[in-house]
Length: 144
Image (cartoon, rainbow, N blue to C red; front, side):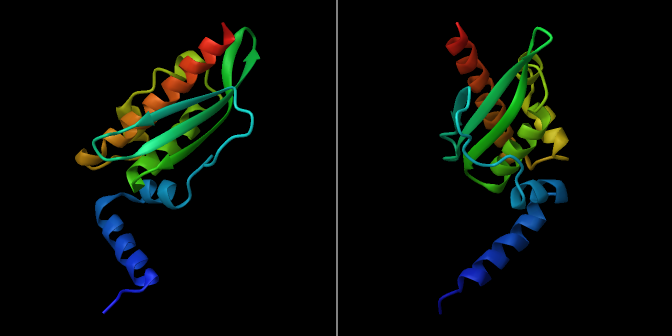
């Protein structure tokens, strides 16, 4: 007997509810700042060979009072619920921050902002932080 698409989605949703907290599920189901950005100032790429997740972080930077500030940020993540939620949370944390502030985000700051992740999924937050640092690095290299 074949399962219908909707029965599979419902089954997966129920499994996710047992693994992830409400905040993680909210960022997974309704990710913020998701999608490719037109004409970004820089794009960072990160991936995890461990689980096969891959992401792109897009940024636009504005100069304000001799500071470089992340004016716009978006992401594309191909991966699990934790990877998508971590990417979404990262964009909320980074928007409006200086490049110096944003590049210091740690995996645990992202995990804490999400209210926690299961231990095997913490590497997803590492990928999000690495993607942002890579975008900032690319931006600075272009600017030189």
